[in-house]
Structures are given as C-alpha cells and as structure tokens.
Amino acid sequence: MNRIKEVLEEKGIKQTWLAEKLGKSYNMVNGYVQNRQQPRLEVLYQIAEILDVDISELLVSRTNKK
Image (tube, rainbow, N blue to C red; front, side):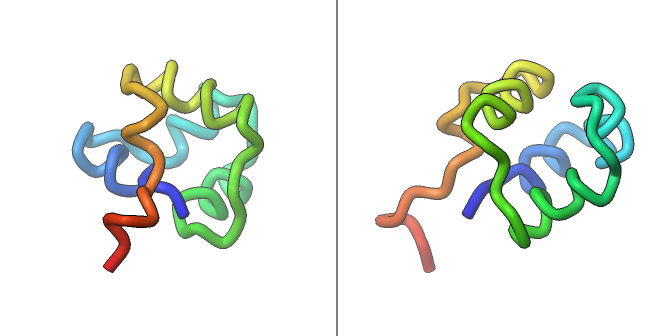
C-alpha cells in the first residue's frame, strides 16, 4: 500500500501532471494512486523527488494500517 493519492490531494496535484513528470502513462500512475499496482522502488524515489516529500511519506506503515 502507498499514500500517493493522499499526498497528491494534500498538495493539490493532479495525476496527469505526475504522469507527465514521470514519463509514464496516466493509466500507470492511476494504478499506483488506486493501489492496484505498486511502483518499483526507483519509481517511488522519483515520485518522492517530484512531489518534494521524503519517501517515507509515500509509504503506509503496517502498524498504522486500519
């Protein structure tokens, strides 16, 4: 599980913008955002850099899961 959707909402950023910055399709980014698929670690680092957040902010801790 990841928190990409929450971070995008917090920052007011659209998935289409993130997809463009990553050089990925909207469908691929939407899969990440909806947690249908998880990005590779290097892509997760790219996302963190683009969104200007620490990579830990994109991850869901197992202990914090509801």
